[in-house]
Length: 563
Image (cartoon, rainbow, N blue to C red; front, side, top):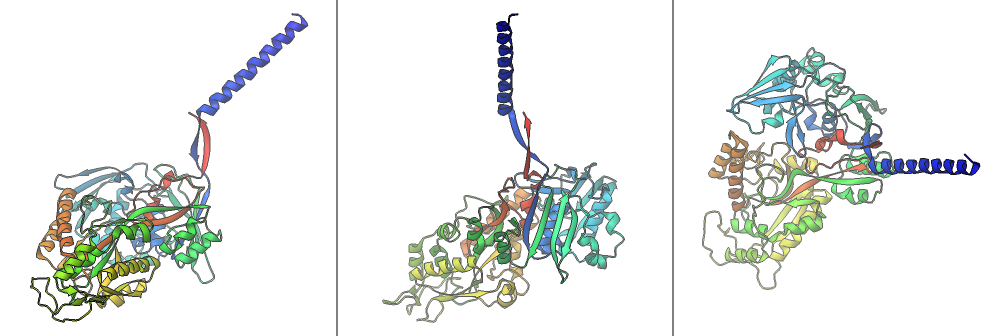
């Protein structure tokens, strides 16, 4: 070839080569995807201090429960979208009479020390829960349950009565029998394994540090390399412990931590302004209500209670006071439970009807007065609506609540709305730690604004059955109704969840009609995670530690590959 032809040939080759590179680049760019990769740490602030990171005891301490949820796994686990699904168990068979549960353990399941999880470990854990010598706060939930080992991988639970909530009881973290069985029951709370645990969850204990006073300051978990489930991606979780929400929030502001496990109402604005974190909200079964002490002469009158309920604008409470980080409640059944009925309307906001009802019942506002008074005129008497024979007495009450920003703001809004109705309110606050001893136990309240926590089994029996009135009970409104008692009793002995749900809805309709309380709103749980973490926010939680329910899907690092 001539020199000119050679130049043309080489030029053509170069053009083809460049074109191929370009096409390859276009293909790679069009087909590359980023996938989660292993790596990265998260440093999180928790309130309190760990003491017993052990499924037998962890439920009484949020810090313990958070750590235990990462270290241990149960036969079943709760999934934010699917409900209760298999975990250590790879199959579960339930008898037709709902009394026998046969579960087979995943043959690949291992503890973090590499030992296999077997039926003997399950039998030991549940036997310890039942044994009073272990002093587990959960022991009452496991009475009347028989557990047997069928073979090395199979366990059989036998119930005396059907229990629609039994699936939850199968989520208890399993302890390794070979490490715990030689420790005397009374010595178990003192064992070092409570702070250096061996479990079968996605994360394993690595180390902890203490301050000069012996309090644990940091606690580090690492990926459990023996985990049988989806491989967790975040390499380590480093937890730091603080005495209260304010100090935890300050630690985040000062960059001593990257995340906060719980953000209280009064600190949410501060964290929302922190550009390094996402403030996340999930619904949780914590319901706030205004309870009436029906032993009070005025509050015995149904017309007064109904008028108060009609005068409170719950939508305004949620949207303005709580910045829409809550949902309106119309009854005692929590959204997120199978019994919840979204069509149940409860008592509607109707201040005109409230005023008219009080006028009719003999509670009228004299000309020029700001408060209603008991009328001098005789009023027709009905059971439950009798007007106390004290003409001229103002209609006013003391509203007792917890001394936190959330409850004080809600109480003030209720006070303002009831003042428009001519009902006087004096707000009294108490420390949360003293609520039970100083207020509930002594019955020292007229109106009580507080929350109840349904947790994993929001059984209304404890709050509304007549047997729960008085010392040690939670029926703080002194509500008594024989029909309501029967519905609650039948619901507890229902054979199926569907039957229990029907009875619970019937009870709700009866209860709300009699107005022993005004159900206001269901809370959201707020926590902060750094923006570097990719996670799917659980729409609802049963307990605070459920924010880690899908922790295997969390990731910080990514890798690129072709699809």
